[in-house]
Length: 179
View 1 (cartoon, rainbow, N blue to C red):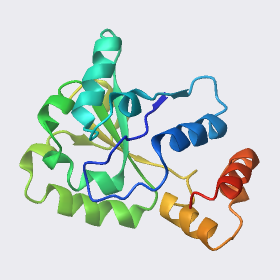
View 2: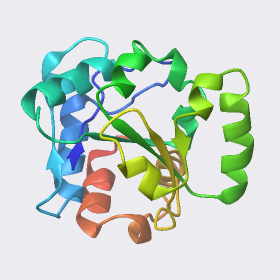
View 3: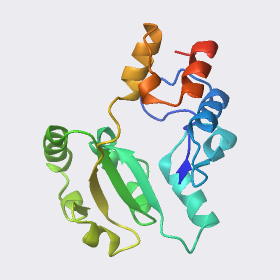
View 4: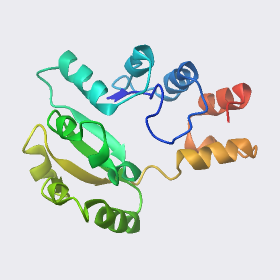
């Protein structure tokens, strides 16, 4: 699994930590040998667009099935992404969400005017895995109990975040005072 920090967001999102600092945070936080901190967007420079990243990974791993994991918040505008139809033509997308009440309202708003999304969204893993690209799967995630916004807010207010991350990362964040 590749963890790829954005270089410069193509949205309104304000990224506080530098690319180098976000790479450092990932290296501290990820201890599983199957997790790879991938700096391709930082090295590429400029504004980050998902299509460039997916194409780059596809070229590197042409025989593999690619899965893009995003949060529910990104689903609402997914069809407005730069070259979205090319992205979905190269990979399947897993949409991770925390609360059941989040998914229904967001999903209805997301696909209300996008009939093309209705046909590719699935909650059935068998249907999702039947194709190596072109599907969106909704995956409820119970292990994530806090958002990154909440973590940044707690750090800013000098509250502990130790139950949400490895102790080494909390120590690094407090020492470096990024948030």
